[in-house]
Image (cartoon, rainbow, N blue to C red; front, side, top):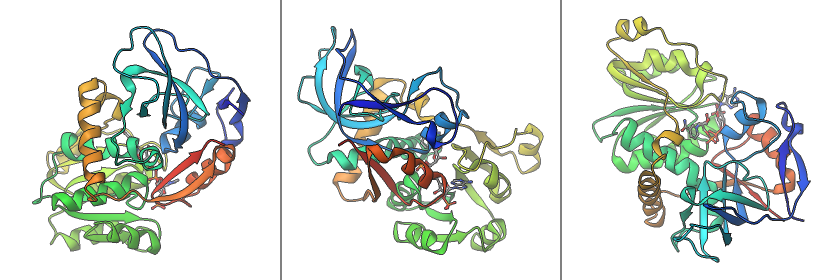
Length: 324
Ligand code: NDP
């Protein structure tokens, strides 16, 4: 049955309700995409909970893969039948969506629909974090939080490819082992070990050049105290709640630190950037430098359970949702 999930008000996963709806014709600049696989991302939980408020009622989900079924006026570079993916357009939790043409990425042959749905948003994020926000080099040491998660496993593999030293953190021994298998040089289980003390020990007291921090509130002090002078704090997510406000004075006191709060939307606002980052990422996947771990698959109809599992930290790697 055609349709999509939407919510009338923010809240727990149960606010997500399926609504039957036939595909609509695209207006100018839009493309109708029939989905074959849908990505699950932590940002979806921020939209659902109201941490990132959306005008209501709203469709949810921001990443999917599918086939172009119709194009609106003015769309000249995408043809019916083309396999495409998108990361960052609302309405992905459904069997179809109307997407601005400028947001669509045509898929290379070597990338399957499932892999693209599991990785485009996370891969684009890793691409800008490692090559633009902080240009990670082989001489750098990076702290990587939530290292066994969707973004985390991609970031570890890409960081290893660069040759950087990576200190991963995760919430269980199974997760730290997974991070090491995927490229982390060292891993710290934050439930049983003191993260800052371990980082100091592993770096001979120096600290790290950069902290890739998607955990937010719970990891804020670890990142701040693990950086070396002139280090960069990249706060790019809120899995444990929002990071606290940053007092500029603390950046001085800790040694002229840099602090940034980046978002994929800014780094892919220009279509040329979107396509360049996607190309850099997919090339590494087709060259087998990065393996996409699709560790959870749910029918789209089980979306509520998928949200519960993601928030309960039961998942590792990527999760996809499959329309019926
Ligand atoms: P993940 O697969 O990484 O899942 C989140 C992980 O965060 C959990 O598995 C868990 O790992 C960790 N975590 C720590 N504290 C909590 C908590 N209190 N509740 C739940 N999880 C917690 O998700 P994604 O790969 O989809 O996204 C990773 C992060 O990157 C998210 O924070 C997301 O918002 C951010 N992001 C930011 C982007 C940007 O441009 N700014 C773009 C894309 C993603 P553990 O058990 O090891 O602690």
